[in-house]
Structures are given as structure tokens and as C-alpha cells.
Image 1 (cartoon, rainbow over the protein chains, first blue to last red):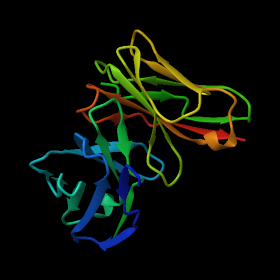
Image 2: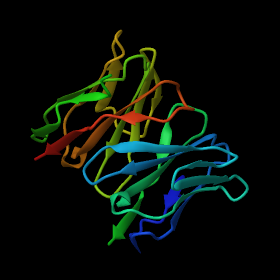
Image 3: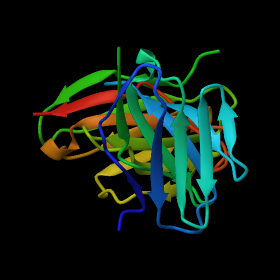
Image 4: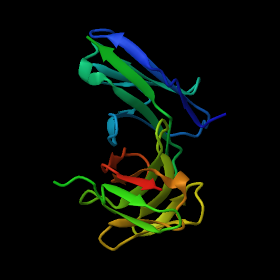
Amino acid sequence: RKEVEQDPGPFNVPEGATVAFNCTYSNSASQSFFWYRQDCRKEPKLLMSVYSSGNEDGRFTAQLNRASQYISLLIRDSKLSDSATYLCGLNTGGFKTIFGAGTRLFVKA
Amino acid sequence: DAGVTQSPTHLIKTRGQHVTLRCSPISGHKSVSWYQQVLGQGPQFIFQYYEKEERGRGNFPDRFSARQFPNYSSELNVNALLLGDSALYLCASSLELDRSGYTFGSGTRLTVV
């Protein structure tokens, strides 16, 4: 089993839709969790950290479910500019962040 | 403030050659990590340096090496290049070892022919 797994998609949604992605992880010792956004042929950019209590940043909401070992990202009122690949990353308290392969999102007009 | 800077942006090398990639972290960041990303996959961890010491090494062959300098900039070296080393090499800067997220540089796109 991979350490971090994501549905590769693509998710094709219309503008204004709500879309959610999950990311499952296998190491229960994982301590820090993140969502990154990566545009085509660009570097990943930190979207948000994921806290145990969940957190929200505008149209984006991240949740952590330690019991089932997954994190989620919810995007409300999708915009064309949200089209990108969304990477989850987690750190087990050591020296590296492990990334999933990413979920591709296409928002269409 | 300057972000994470990487050089060169693109590079074409021949099999068997050696390459050096460079990274300058955000001012004040003492941690630099290197990742390899091939098309369709997430970034794969290569090295992390913190306060000029190697703190972690990923599952890469000994052809890959790195170092961090007193000014916290870093170099990634790859010897005896293989076709499979063609990838986007990303440098990530962070304030702390594990709890803060990364700021990535724009990467070096290496093509081995």
C-alpha cells in the first residue's frame, strides 16, 4: 500500500459547483498535513495546512479524519481558475513531507 | 522579498554526464529540501538539509548528493546521469523542520538525452 493515495481524477465540474477530494495515508504517526496546488508545468504552491479541528480559507475547507486516516479538501463555488492538480502532503514528525500523486481538477464554463 | 530561487531553469545533458543544481532559500529559512518530480507523479523526496546538516535522505542512489552552505543555499549533484533522471527538480524552503509547509522554487527541468 502506498504511503499516500489520491484519486488521480480528472474531476470535471462546471463553474459554481462544489467538489471534494480525499487523500488517504497509511502511517498513523503522521502529524502534519497539507494541501498544495500545482498548475501545469509549475511548482507546487501551499494552499493550506490541515489542522485536527479543520480549517477554512474562503471557498476552501480542509478536514482531517485521524480515525479513518484521510484528509479532505472541499472547494465551493468552483472557478475556472481553480483548475489545477491538488497534491496532499504529510509529515510524520521527521524530516520529510511525503506527497500523493495529485488529483486533477478541470472547472469548465 | 525574494522567494526560493533555483538555477538553471532548464538543462539538457547527455547520459553519463554530471549536473549541479542550485537553490537559494527564502531569507531566514534554514531548511532546504530537494524533490524530484516526473510527469504524472507527486514530488519524491531526495534530501533535506537543516542548519547545514543532512537530516534526511530519500530512496535515491548514491549518484545523488547534496550540500548546504553557510548562507543556507544548497546544491544538488547528480553523477553518471541516466535517461530516467529526466525530471523537474524542486527545491523547497521551510522555516521549521516539519510543521510548516514548504515554499517551492520554480524548479530545474532536467532532460537527459
